[in-house]
Amino acid sequence: MKIHISNSSDEPIYEQISRQIKNQIISGELKEGEGLPSIRNLAKELQISVITTKRAYEILLAEGFVDSVTGKGTFVSSQNQELLREKKMKIVEEKLTEAIDNAKILGISKREIQQMLNLLYEEE
Amino acid sequence: MENILEIKNLNKQYDGFSLSDISFSLPRGYICGLIGPNGSGKTTIIKLIMNIIPKDDGSIKVFGLDNEADEVEVKSRIGFVHDTPDFYKESKLKIIKEIVAPFYIEWSDEKFMGYIDKFELPLKKKFSSLSLGMKMKFWLAIALSHNAELILLDEPTSGLDPVFRREFLEMLSDIIQDERKSVLFSTHITSDLDRIADYITFIKNGKLVFSKTKDEIFDNYGVIKGGDEITNAKYENSICGYKKTSLGVDALTNNIQGIKTSLGDKAIYEKATLEDIMYYTDKKETKA
Image (cartoon, rainbow over all chains, first blue to last red; front, side, top):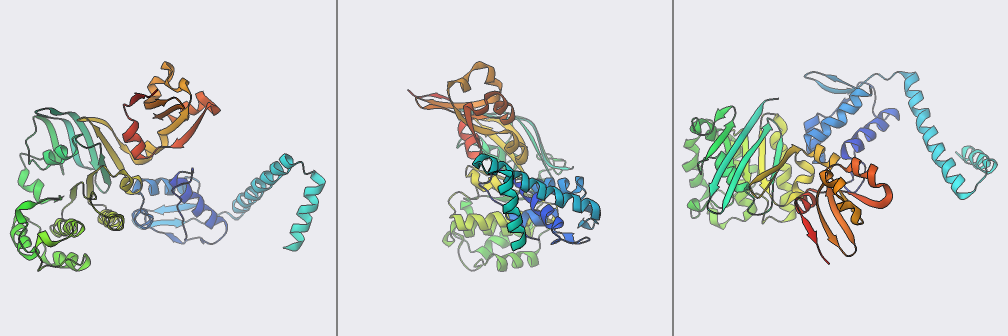
């Protein structure tokens, strides 16, 4: 697991943590059943408050990304494949919307974007 | 959650200074920063907890025990780290250890030697020959060797260089790993607390401004910069202090969401640091 905290970011620290862990679960870097560091240990490693870390884990728990086993710790929950796909689709959708918004500001037509998309997709 | 420290309606009157009606508590397993400008009463609170000076009234409970009636037990479970213990100045560290160890029920020589190793402390040197950072480490080693559950630190980082300060903060987060210990530490170097502290207790002129989780503070406080309308009476409840110049108004709010909704893009908004909060609170300054 990798987490980078930015002190100058507008995003609160607990959100930075929960978002980065979420992304790693969705991308498969963190696998089902894998254990997360304890709240206190993560707080120590990142040199941040225990309460902040706890809050980040609570978000992950509430959104079903992790399970908490009393006395054992926090683990990546078994992700419903369909749900996971939906979450991934949502990320792509968000990025595309962002690209479209930018295109509109710059006066790029729908046709031009489609061409761009085709070209980029083939290149990959 | 069990409170390791509980202070209720604490009062202390001196000539020209009074600490009035201070109440706050600290749960077990967390770090609390006690902040405030110089002379605000931080050291007085720590001395009152240690019963070095007697309180006028109110109650101080440590581990659920009264700090005066159960003084011996309370003190044997507190680790007090302070910067100027002059009485030991000319003694070697080894001798100081031999003097203080018998006072503690749970003293462990083994643990002590472990920390001496870990902190790289020279046992054969005189206390006065140590650097400030080493002195702090030594008292911390003593505190940890008698299994202290509450570590009280009075301005531990003032006078330390940034490198050592970071190391020291890492030691503090290490201490609370076992979920049993708590740390209360007073400081005016608030950047030390912006990250590692779980709770912040803010004292000003002998009065409690707030005692909250740091997350709660950063969620609600913010610095706003804009025009004169910020000082308008209708925002009075949300503005904690301001500084007005010919170029505009800089202010501190404890209701950043509310103010954003009302003022919209008539102002700019920034995160408040603890230093901002200390600086702006109760400030009403107008410069032509």
